[in-house]
Structures are given as C-alpha cells and as structure tokens.
Length: 141
Image (cartoon, rainbow, N blue to C red; front, side, top):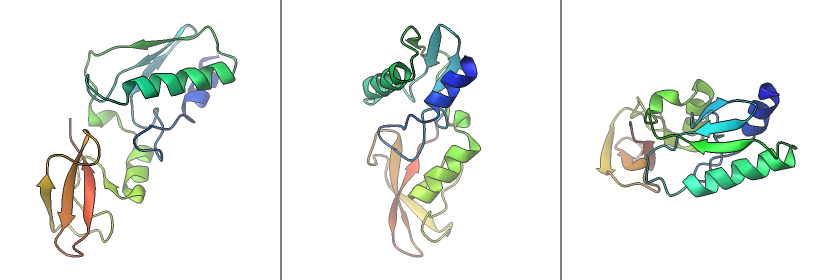
C-alpha cells in the first residue's frame, strides 16, 4: 500500500513550481498506511495549505480516503532533500537549483544576485552577466 501512496504523491506537483512533484521537492517525509508526513520548505510557506489540499485530493481520488496528512516542522526542511531528478527539473524549468549559481539559460557562472526576493519566498532573483538574462535561484536553506 505504501508504494501505491508514494506513486500517487509522485504525481502531485508543487503549486509554485509545477514541474517538480512534492516528492521530488523532498517535502513528503514519510508514508505509512495511516498517514503522509510532510514538512514545508519553511514554516511560513504560503503554499502549505495548497500542498495539503492537493495531496488530499490525490489521495482521495486514488481511494486512500483514510490516510491522514500530518505536518511536521522538525527537523526543518533542507534543500538537501530535493532529489537529483527534482534538481534537473528545476534547471530545465529555468530555476538554478541549490548548490549552483550557473545560469539556467546559457550555463555561465558569471552570475550575480539582484535581490534576495524572487518570484516566491523560497527563491532569489539573479542575473547572468554573460547572456544578461534574469533567473530565479532556489535559496539554500
């Protein structure tokens, strides 16, 4: 049953970055027959309610009506929990994954932070000085 639940969750996209699933983002921490445990990217994440709602819809649609959703804030989420597949999807989507400041457009390392505030609270705004394109970079948490 747990494998079936993991498979359902792998199809639930993050509401702010729809190319990456909640599993690939690493916010699904554990799955038991009774509950799905999630840890938001940070305690004030505005997408937390949407994520829980989307997980609930997916579980219900798959027939897992009795599986609860539990939020745990400790240990705190870290970008280390993003899967390799998730990192690749972020880059392909135009977001520099944590651990690199390479431009997702041209690959140049000649980049600079413009603002700590990007399109969502978990991203910062950067610019490539080679191709001059702006891009979001996932903040390392």
